[in-house]
Figure 1 (cartoon, rainbow, N blue to C red):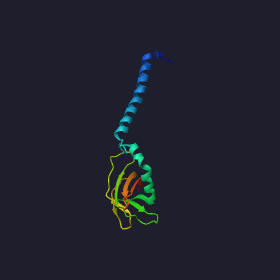
Figure 2: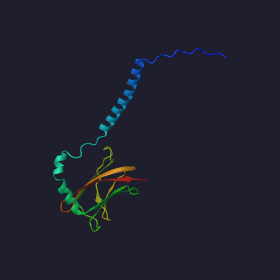
Figure 3: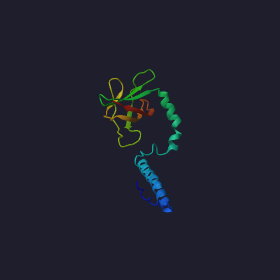
Figure 4: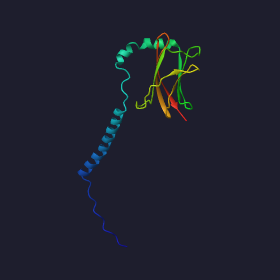
Length: 161
């Protein structure tokens, strides 16, 4: 049996270490840049212009909303492609609103946001014909009671098979 002569092993030099370190940190920096780019590109923006100004009336607005005693339940009827909002008073009766505006969208991005026009159905619920794909959805509700009291809420719901 013949043996081949061993190849000489090249020594690990400072240049090899530099290339290894640059490659390692280069990958980390590239991933961080991509992640930061995605975070900025999908940022939906500010909720309010001035959080300090909003905070000044928060307790008063919240107390008025709680005093309404409403129970609000969002839902989606997939068979009818219909967004449904149920507003019930303390007695469990449907609430007749002065006005309502709704924003429906994904919780993490704004590209699928929409403002459906809600109408009161025969059963007292507020409905809008809106085809929503499967997944998690966020709904922001702004409504006024007949006496002008503002009701605001944000809720989440799922559209499932």
